[in-house]
Length: 332
Length: 259
Image (cartoon, rainbow over all chains, first blue to last red; front, side):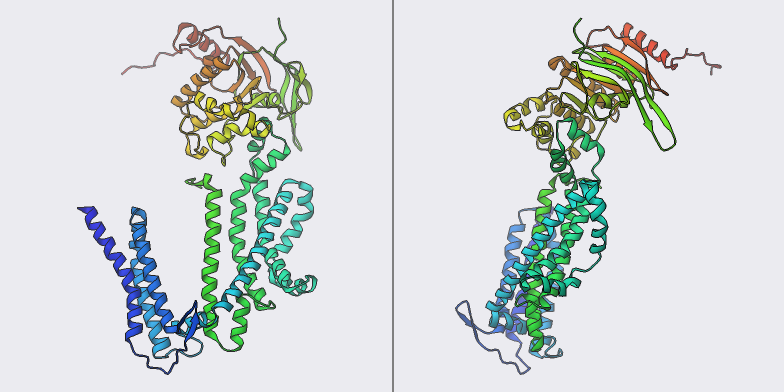
């Protein structure tokens, strides 16, 4: 009986979630356009459409996504509860999207061009999808190069500092001083010594990541309990074994704290570097659009960033969970 | 008589601070035969763990020498396995990987990994191979610690109060397990403990140490067959004798009044 009632609640939840977005799509089509806006037709993926139709299409896609999520989640009780919990929020989101549509596009009651409606932002995606993609890939390339170099050099520095007292003596004061300087402060310097703008930005992102990862790796290595090293030694391990099989695994949780925290620094540095002297990237796109007061493009770029950075953060979390799975359920 | 497995000759160990100098071990002499089970007992601060660490090669004496099979001990070696009181396991490795750690450290993992299941079975942890240390009980963790020492085929196993942090039932269980392992592998073992009962139950000889400066006061032979009955006549008698040595046994006094 109880589970039947629960299933009923779940079915209603899925329905409500979808309904919110479908309602926004329906009202978008039903409410007449009051303000004087022309939706120009564009060709995208071989289909000719305008931004308002594209917006409605996105809403339908969203409701489809939540329908599929609802079906997939039905298999586990935990996921079902999560879905039910989010229903109210998602439904209200649908209503807010309509409200935004009404004020931003239909009536143009919001101050223009600073606050475009959803269709206005879609205009950027429909008209310049190739250009946005190109800039997104440029940002992604910058991020991957800079972040990877920063993490690798950070871990290496951290291990050396944590393991060798002599290296610690000479390097850790320098690390402490360099660590407090925001990486973007090095920009003029980076642009001078690096052969091109791309490598200059890679350098800045790497610097923003390096300090924290190095410091935390060193702390993790140094905080390894003496007993663990002795255990490694009595088992027959040499110094190399103690570094790679005792100190580094012990430092991994701290290394990951460094990586996840500095990931945020890397995003900040990336966008700032792009805004101040890159031939491409989402930051560049924002800057270039701002000059023409094309705020709808600014918002479009911000949405792409939100999605891109969330995905990257999520991937790092997945990796962390996988590598640190031995910590699962540990009460700290 | 054949050469002893372990020979400790005139060993002194002094800890020096900025102001104080403490003689932790004073003129220690001891010989351990192959296959023997020795317990070292004494109150805390008598230097029993220090002595064990010297044998392991985790510490060096100021003077005197330790020999294993006639060879001077200068550092750690997988020949002398060491089981820590607690916290010796690697938290990031599963039970199976912890047992294999010694093989990995000695670069003989590929040749010897087929032996891992045998050791898991020996400590009765089948089904726990893929489990991490924090997910098992303290008693299980110590069994893993013993197994990962044994897989190195040591000449000697040093046990540093491995049962100190366990409850009574788990402790008795682990004691029997240790006897079983010893019978099967005929490994020489040296156990540091402050539990007289434990020493009596397990050992062939009991070394009694006294503190400040830490020295060997007496070595007592325990001539009893295994399994030992903790309530047997000889056992109880020897326990009383041991307790007396620690000035702990007192005559049961009559109550001063009755209700």
